[in-house]
Length: 266
Image (cartoon, rainbow, N blue to C red; front, side, top):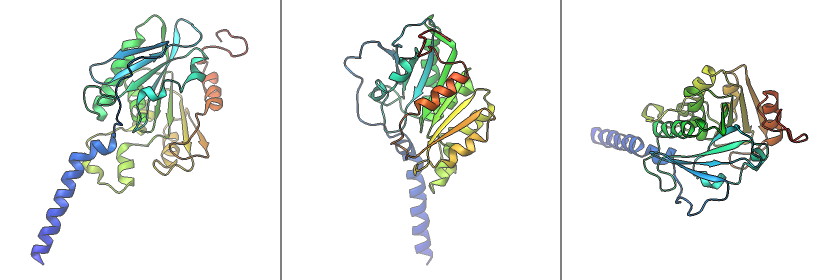
């Protein structure tokens, strides 16, 4: 019996060790891919110490332009979203697409700290430009990218925070999945960031999301009096972007760059 208990204890120690060592490959599964050889017109590559970013210029030129900083979800690449924000580009927004360290052949390895550092470096690299309105910066994160967006809101002034399929905190999500959260090496605490921020928050979540249940967004909404939650009949990876609801939200805040009907600044 003592030998059996020793074997079980040893196996548990090995398992815990593997979970600790391998967790980043589980939390940040970077898909295969390299930087594009040629970028579409109107897209600028923004090199960083680790990771990189793409600055997509608006369709309708206005100086300075408001900026949406987008942090993508897991198992995705920033370049996959180059054509995903036409609705915002047509309204005069510039889009900054963040790529995480270690993704798409970039230097570094992904972690909460390295992703946060890359996000802030990318934002600082473009907000000093005359063509970008640094008073109208919107942080937008999807899934794991919600952690990066909340990190931006915690360290920089943002006019609004958009969180699509976010988690309450990475520690809560890990514990919810049955893993020992005390082993977690990276922590994105979205709840603390939302509670501390004065920025209005737009939450968007699928009611059928099995990966990150909508309860996470419901709990995040309770952290801010300025938060609104839009529910959609979808899961985690099949939700359409909520452009109509999002434009209403931005319009109420006076953040829309152009009026579609008049074609002039509001």
